[in-house]
Image (cartoon, protein in one colour):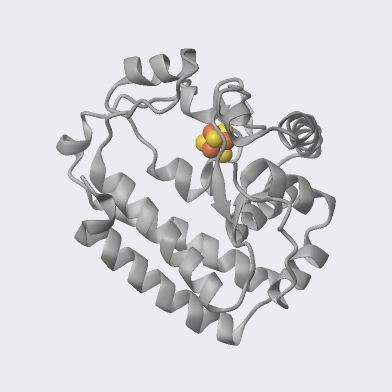
Length: 231
Ligand code: SF4
């Protein structure tokens, strides 16, 4: 099924894109940018809550299963800013230090890689800790939408070097998250913001080094994330 042809994808994308354009015309502060990510995440949760639990019973995703936390993740810049702010504002200092050290380590390994090298590398996301997402309340839309109705297929993809095997999924959840993400990106692009889609590790590395100044420059139109493109 072509997700982009579903009504859910189209309505979410159009609504968020319009909202983001209007919001950015009035407020490009750090908080304003983070709010855009929070609003998209809240919409994603509301959509998820509205789905029929019986339909979602087919999902085989569960706590401790982390196959999907090894491929590269792409996110909108405000989503990454929201994650970094969450780490600083909500996690204990020891956890902040652990995450920043892990981002540094993973960045050093993956940044020089080509796309195919990174995709087949199976390097865990730096936010993964003991099989769980340490920033779960603010995880990116890409992670929120990804779902599987076959744990066995996820294991197969993880263990094989060919990564193009299609994992069966619950389509409404994917359509909702992708529509929201594309709406967010569309609004950012239409507002003149450059390289709005970034690799989670690369952009986290940049924003942990300097959050406010990088975001302020980006909001004024500088191409701050040109070296953080997705793989
Ligand atoms: S952000 Fe969280 S859910 Fe997403 S890949 Fe990383 S650990 Fe997994």
